[in-house]
Length: 325
Image 1 (cartoon, rainbow, N blue to C red):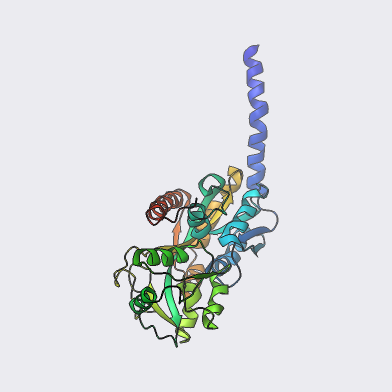
Image 2: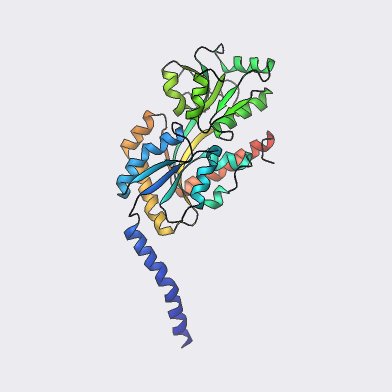
């Protein structure tokens, strides 16, 4: 008799879970999905989300709405997703700034990305470029560093957020070379760039995605890029390693995340859909055209990469005394 009671008790608990799984697979998604990009329009994070959102909508057969929620170097939009209802209808187009750098070097982050978010797919990694206006007297990064060393606090740098990878590259360059260049922070590279073009700052370090059109137009001069080898579209821009700064090598990466707590049946729909999105030749072509080459990673590989990046950045931040207090 007891065995039958136990059997029915197990069934009572198991059946709703089974029913939910079946229903989720049949019905999810059945309405619009909000893809939150925690950056202002015009930056590489915003550009990236719009590259793949249309194809994602086609595959899932529901509208995908890209929503900008900038602020706090990506923190505000990230927290919004973490606190949202865990039903799979609010996803995050997250970047390494908010996922890795902010939680380590800024007090503003009140979340643990490995605990509070589930990585679904890595999209792209993009190098940063140190640049100046085309009329700047600095023709090389070494010239700029020599001037800054002799003239502390005379130059100004524009950054798309005080804790993103581009800013981290800039900060490490300053610390390692004992130079002082004040920074003017903005919500994204798209907002920082006009400050450089308008002559309000002397230099900038942003993603190549943001800067490329202006370098091609001759408005901006690239001094160094943080990629492992020279960029095929900009072969005249040397890498930071070539110039003797191999430690300035972080790239800005982007991926799709769900909040921890989203049911597994929903993730089972999203994960293969995103793989199809990022392996689609049209999406790959769109990404290449804006200097965001796709480097797809599935959830397991992405999480390992993610954890490794956190460990590396934390060690460098500690050595450079950039860790948050």
